[in-house]
Image 1: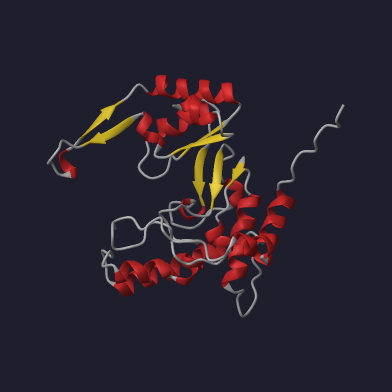
Image 2: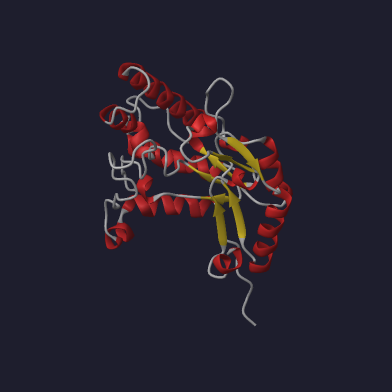
Length: 256
């Protein structure tokens, strides 16, 4: 399977890569709390993955987010595979966003994921509005809105402290904040950067809403622009230029 996949790809992202170590199995008809961990031979699984990636000259990214044992991240690094760094989760013990310079090098860095708010959606509090509408909030709506506003303030404070967003009055608009978030990616030492067109194009709706099946159009939200429009959109050009300047491609050797 890996060999055939990597035959046509320069890289592979392994979703929930901790599944190479263990998975939570639930017997048919039982509840989620009645399951147990089933462990796998992680060294063998990683060895096969590394071998096929080496043969294909491909990079491997493991999604080591959420409840992940330290052995998972250590195992990826030991095989020179990349972990995942997401801006929303790059926090210290007090909940403050950490400077991009402190992000790990062996990682793919992104602003968000498909299961989290888009950059514009986070700034606008869209994730609270939609989850309230779908009855997914576990606390009072006012509490969630206050929490979202506090997280927004913490994010903007980090961007200002790093010189990525000016401390002007009135503050910069959300579009400028989204550009600053991409500047944070570019300022990090991470080896790969991932950019979502949802963020760049100002889409506030997130692609997937965990906890829903038919209540939300998961994986069915089209981009808010056509391919032709994307190619000429000044927001796309601006962020592409920002990232290209920060991460210039190495010069190709002269042709013989």
